[in-house]
Amino acid sequence: MDRVEKIVLAFAAGLLGIFFLALLAAARLQGIDVPPCLPPEVRPFTEGRVDTLPNGTRQIFYVARMWRFEPEVVEVPAGQPLDIFLSAADVTHGFYLSWSNANLMAIPGAVNAYRVRLDKPGVYPIVCHEYCGTAHQNMVAYLVVK
Image (cartoon, rainbow, N blue to C red; front, side, top):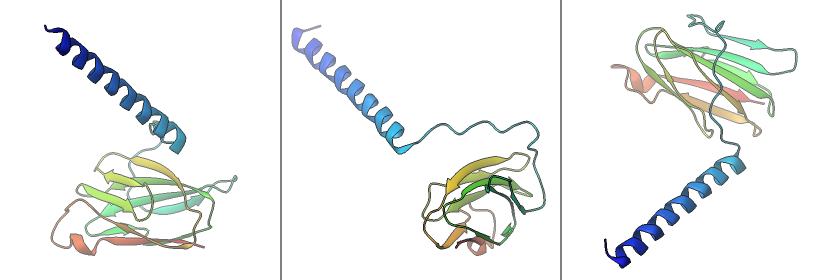
């Protein structure tokens, strides 16, 4: 290998290392982390519901089914943590909470979860982003933050 090739290769490896460290720093500063594992008692469910924990955290259990989310409209207070649990009753669906980082897949027989805090009051549409059949475009729910 030529001397110039070694220099270019070392420069590229160093630049790759800098990019990797910058990515880790950005993730750390933004609070991005690997999602936690769900406890074994969280099993797939077929009924949507909203629970409020003693500390004020809302747990929303969404069920995706052709062609709707249950519950369809949920009202929550602004600034409170929300634990979103998602299960599918029939086929694979997508779950995207507009204007947030909540983007999940609803897979039959599995439960996905995400924690989010919405500080700005408003209506946040939830849409399915995975084609799930002929009425897929009608699959919308709403999270109302007051």
